[in-house]
Amino acid sequence: MASEAIYTNKIFLCGALPLLKTIVNDVPSLKSKFKKVHCVYQVSCLDPDAPDGKWATHFVVNGDEWLVHANKVAHRVGKQKYVELEFKSVDAMNAFFKGKIGPATLPKMKGVNFIYEFGVFMMALLKMADLLGLETPPEDEETKRLLVKCYFYLLSVGISTLNKLGHEKIHEWTLKSPDRVYAWKVNGEESVSAFIRIKAGKSKAGKGEYKRAMPFFTMRFDSLDSALGILMSIDDMLDSVRSGKLIMDGAPEFGAQIGEYMLLVGALAK
Image (cartoon, rainbow, N blue to C red):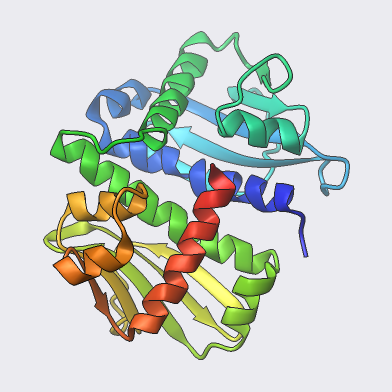
């Protein structure tokens, strides 16, 4: 079983950082800035226990095409443009992404000579930090939609990641489970959904709706505002169910169970 520091680190590497692709694609002003970019981007932290001496997530960006390699270290090829933020330790990276920014947590910046490529990557990271750092719901619908989508992706991937790391409570849940799909969605918002499929100790998170079969359980919200009320810990879950803001498509006990794991991921990421 991994340490809490590693759990947190993998939530960032596997769940949070891959959201950059979603954010860039959904924010036109950012997307346009990457149109002529051909670069490998990496965020990493040094760890003597890691196979490559570090843990990392990297992106291969070619204009509108983003290939996300979560929890994988990049290996440079030839003269390919390369930008990296390298933290000196797992703890330093965790602290930085939790907002504790200072001399002890700042990363080493590689590839700053690629001025344009470095600049737009930092813009994307700052946009992600601003979005996930919001304490109250945004006012405009597009930002609400993007924020809910990011939360859904982060939670589904986060739960699956903790299972793969052997988190005691979550892995025990998946070990005992037959083939089941748990989903999150918002009424009238086809693009705002995510799911996790579990079976006998294995798990796989996915974006969008699961279409191969009816999900075993769906946490369904009547609006983006209702979703943010729960996702941002503003509203009480039981009150939301009673008022019809949150609909449990499935037995209520499974809603309580998946809600507990959502809180667990949230606590590690804050």
